[in-house]
Image 1 (cartoon, one colour):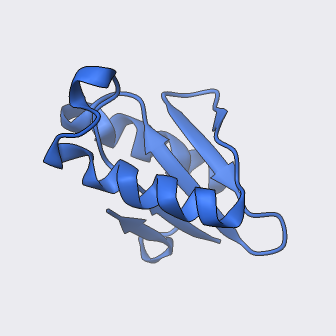
Image 2 (image 1 turned 90 degrees about the horizontal axis):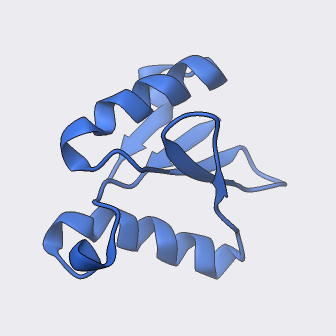
Image 3 (image 1 turned 180 degrees about the vertical axis):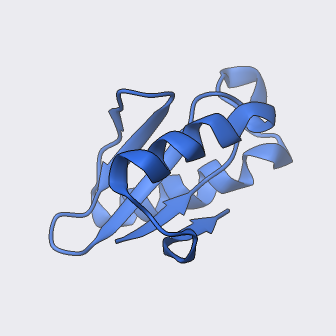
Length: 87
């Protein structure tokens, strides 16, 4: 499985700041593939492509604590570092 992690800050006050560029890329990919984000058990939202082994993930912890969510998804899906692309 390949996981694309888009970094950013949650909230309207941050929506158009440069720190949300990772969210923008992930959101556009999801829009083009008609994928819907769902809440996870941990501190992130995700969208999974049905026919391909692609997972999109956006931490809800904010930029400074995004590692918490990334660690959760690595453990949950038993990912290798080489499976992860951070935007």
